Image 1 (tube, one colour):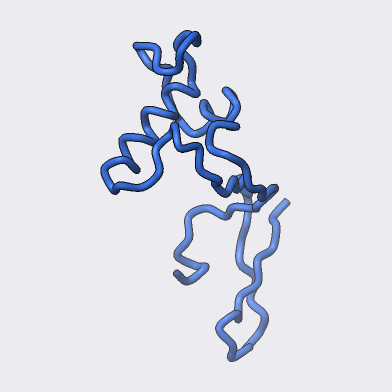
Image 2: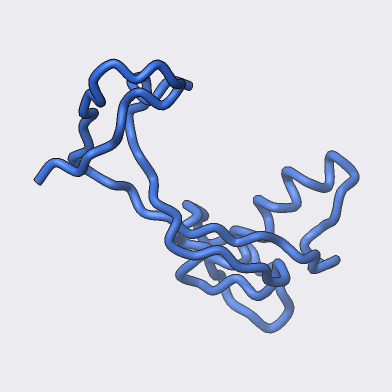
Length: 105
């Protein structure tokens, strides 16, 4: 996609590998999950992690991939939205990257 057509810019702040069930309550909530209405994990009340587990299984069990209880290794990519970006013309460059990002203060 051309940079001019983008609506937001993201900056990756952290990349790591972890097992699926190592997700924290805060991370599960940040994923947009809601607490489940019925307990899924034995001995644990309604949590965002349970909502995330339900969402995960609703996507991946249908595709015959790894379920929540398989606890697969996953990539965790954290990012932040960068507001106030604009394009600055580099003045006639003929490469694909003829526009540079500049942070507008």
